[in-house]
Length: 153
Image 1 (spheres, helix red, strand yellow):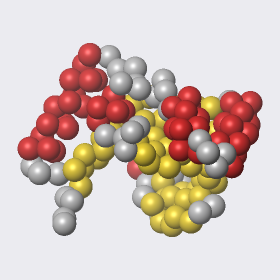
Image 2 (cartoon, helix red, strand yellow):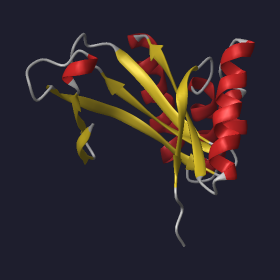
Image 3 (cartoon, one colour):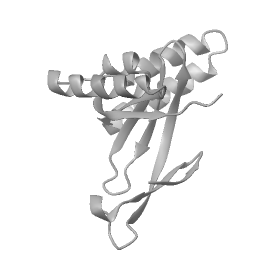
Image 4 (cartoon, one colour):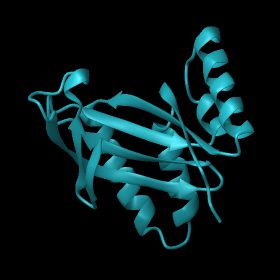
């Protein structure tokens, strides 16, 4: 469960039933390395974090189902299940998002940081270059599920 979010990362509490320590669960802080901001062209956004349990880097990505499912490698049965869930949620008038992730090696994270910084500092082609940097890492995702919320206007 999300407990706190800042520009430095997020604090979550892992339910004891899902492997968290203690009666209240385990509280963990996932440090944010950087963000690929949402763009209507990509229809998704992502964040690169460090898992405090093992120091490994993860990219977590959320976005529109059509933009996310093409980035994942799903078996037919898994794809059918997610599509069924998405149809059910949409039929109930809910706004849906698909969530994916993938492990990143240290050298890939360093490369992303360098490319992202250079793209962000390019006053003439910033948006195009930031798009390209994001697309480069938002691929080969493990699709972990989908969410739905009521989108009140």
